[in-house]
Image (cartoon, rainbow, N blue to C red; front, side, top):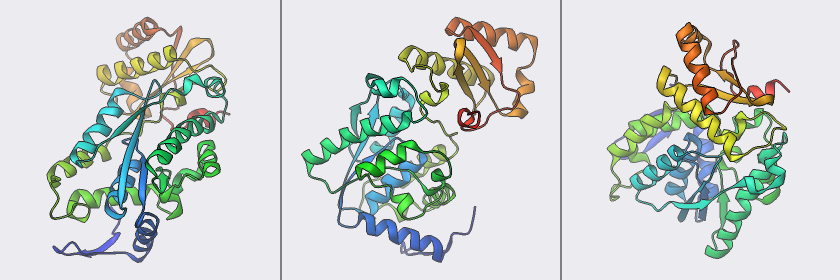
Length: 306
């Protein structure tokens, strides 16, 4: 862990390094005095975003969008966290498969998804008369193609971590700091349990990243609920049967499943018994062909192959 703070005292006064202190002050300026709607996914970025909004803003409403492109586990995690924080999580139905532009699965599908989500949040904003809508894109995310971010900019949705130059590494470091000292977030008079907050964040920070299931489907192949269920069931099976924490099952033409796992774990499933079991199970789930990618797991490999 980088030494991003210099000292701390029991009075909850923290002296951060100059660089991080400047970023935190920018966050504070964005939130200060504002009533904020938070697009909350339950991932590590939006978790720190929600905690920061809770610390610095006037009022917050966290909103989770639930539908076929997300999993029940993600909803449960988001709900659990809001219960720990003693705040109500608003859950909105989200089915971008109703949108033909998204369902066709072009390279900029995330643009259409973000438009769909944020239009719904802007309606909520009008009803409750809140000041801003925020979401968790960070400055590291902009190093790769982000058509969804273009939609956010067009619609005036704020990305506080981009505006304050928070990197993914900064976010993880801040989460680690809060694990060690929840009092930085929790008011002394609050009924929030510091132990529950720390325990939740400890589990969250070791969770592998898990982009939406649509990112497993090769561009140009129509996104359907049936295909999303196939992918989810295949990944659940591989995780549970072979103790694989980091993996992707990617769908290509001709209903072909391409399994990505870390290279060092490939040897563990190259026995004849494992190969036959995996092939049989994934075909039973609905795939026609089953392959193993010898390059191993690569985040965003669909984009790398374009």
